[in-house]
Length: 210
Image (cartoon, rainbow, N blue to C red; front, top):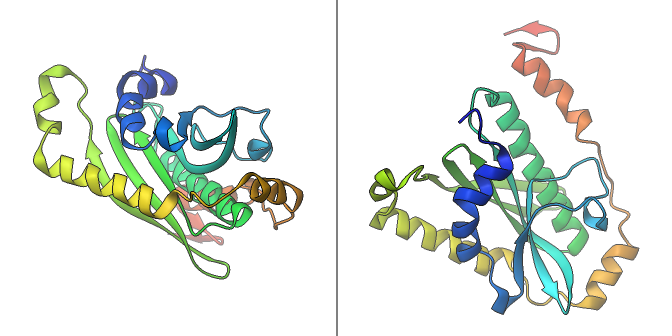
């Protein structure tokens, strides 16, 4: 696992599943890696994967985000927690910018796959919920442990949650243009949240030993 990077892990094992579950060319939804040149990612935060709508020949608004960790010796609980935080913040910003109710997210940690759902509950109140978790098959020999009726049912629920809650077909090109022009929401830096997390990781919080 130490030789398997984030990109290789996602493209080799997960892209086929995620593309079948969420991405759908007929419904104009595509899975892609981040692109620093796009307006959506000109911030201090950039996720490892993005589900985007396709409007004519251009990518539209984001409907979901993903983070990947190789799950090897370089992966720590601290780094995974920061990635989950990044998913929540990216979802919150997308909800605010595109005037939507919820966003979808996934977290890959080695062969553990977790799906999240971020929803705007009230004004300035957002909740990120874990909706499903799987242990993915690392080889053909243990594929039978993943291919089960329980996992099929969970994947069905994940897909239903995405298409019913996170996929908004009513956003138009005019809405996208308006979102770009009025992108004046209060932005806070992710780096501002790192300090309390680092203190917690080091077993100190507000100067008090835990």
